[in-house]
Length: 71
Image 1: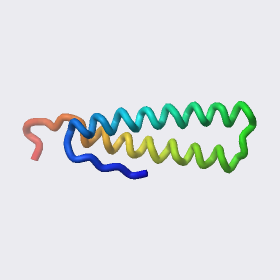
Image 2 (image 1 turned 90 degrees about the vertical axis):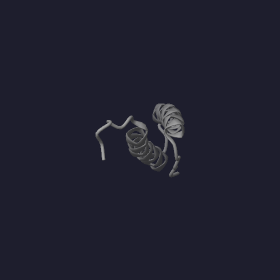
Image 3 (image 1 turned 60 degrees about the vertical axis):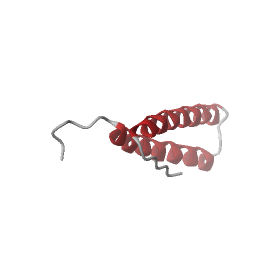
């Protein structure tokens, strides 16, 4: 599930893709909760969302503009 992209443009694309994945998994989690989904399935979904959030934070930091005086 890990992703790596080289440039900032790709980083923005990665951020957008991660947000989309998080939204899809969140919708799936809501459906699981509504139908009383199996706790193991719900836990796996929540772990996947958590992992994607960490990847999103990392990708956002990488794609953020760097200050001119940064080393």
